[in-house]
Image 1 (cartoon, rainbow, N blue to C red):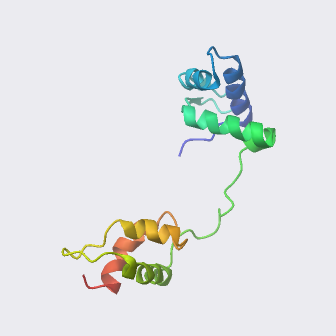
Image 2: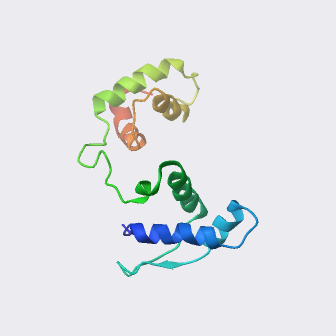
Image 3: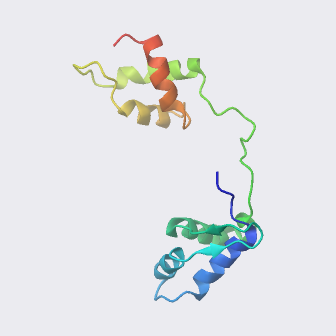
Length: 138
């Protein structure tokens, strides 16, 4: 995994947006996204997408300079995997709302239904593929 850019580098990027040529903010952000920035603290070079720069700028305007600091994830030591019983419960609750199909394949809409029901995390799709044969005969 690549090292995260330092706080100072993020400030330099935002300053570059302020000084960049362009008639509006979008043009300035896009011009800065084409530049390469060197982090003197770590020695790495970075290129940031316009979306990343735009997010940093929005956070800086909304909540100030403290939002640019590197933070650890709030769920760093917690398990982010879905337990099999939680997955089975989510699937059992969403299956009746799906249309029956002739092939016996569960449609991709299961994903969106389970996400909207707030049962799953990012790893749910991989776990669902492993768990489905245990719980259903299609």
